[in-house]
Length: 410
Image 1 (tube, rainbow, N blue to C red):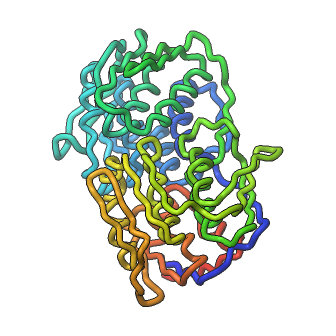
Image 2 (image 1 turned 90 degrees about the vertical axis):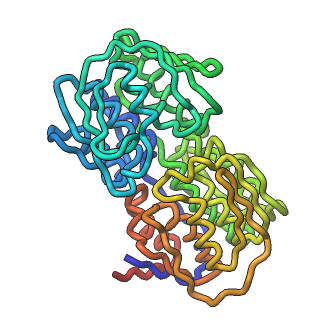
Image 3 (image 1 turned 120 degrees about the vertical axis):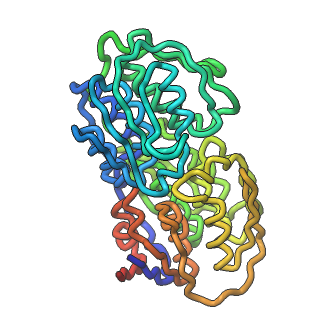
């Protein structure tokens, strides 16, 4: 599907309620499978979460997660501790080129029986579930926090618990802290001191009812819309906690630098206000929040300010190489983006380009949604726009609610 976004000013004063966090949902779904007495409300309805639910409920000998990276990592750990069950875990062609060797090596050191079906270090995997006592292992922290979270979640099954010694600089630390916070609420005993994490399984469950907070990553696209809107434009989003487990709640701080003020009001709603002019340049390290980089750099492009973001080494192994994808698509719009293996630098200068450019999405949901806020400045076409179902299935419908002209075509 292609969508045509006709240049539109955002309708001020509207309210949207966004679906639950994908990250929280997938963690709680795995814990619910390990502890069936758990009740989880407001679970996200995205493709990634559906893939997780389907995989957890499957009794089949093969499980296909398609493009769902979180499900691939979490289910690898889950099936490794499912006794007397053998599963081949596979995904899309792109998934089979996303490395998983760090997680597999860690699980093998705990006694897991996992083999590579095709290419060493990559899915698909053949997993024979065992009972593991747990123990102490080393693991790289520099590649993906999802490897670490996967191990921490299944550590609740280990008689001796689990101690992880993290090697290297920690990437996406807030996602690890989210996992530990959920385990603490469950009743597990956890600690995170320096480069060492310890989890001891719960003796009794302290909490059995969880409500998933709305997704802060989904909110990022509306922060971008506000940043590119006239002064005084407002938008209300729900439902969000002032103290959130989600690392992407850093949006409040990040977009304050781009002219968007966040006000928390009664009932867990946030009011976004285009309050003041943005700063003359944006410079930040996104090591803890790399998934926000695409949205922020497009905001800076629309505002006409230079932007430098570091700490982006994980973006090269996402749904696509996001740094290259950003460079390609901003160039179509006259942008000058320079990239390295872990950073990007956007020049404030723009070239004049023909109107009506089509943005390619590279099977990456964030590419589609990150570029959409430019509708406040130009007509735009988004190719393969249905890719948003991976994390936000009703994104285009929600844009229409805000007065944006969205025309869909096959």
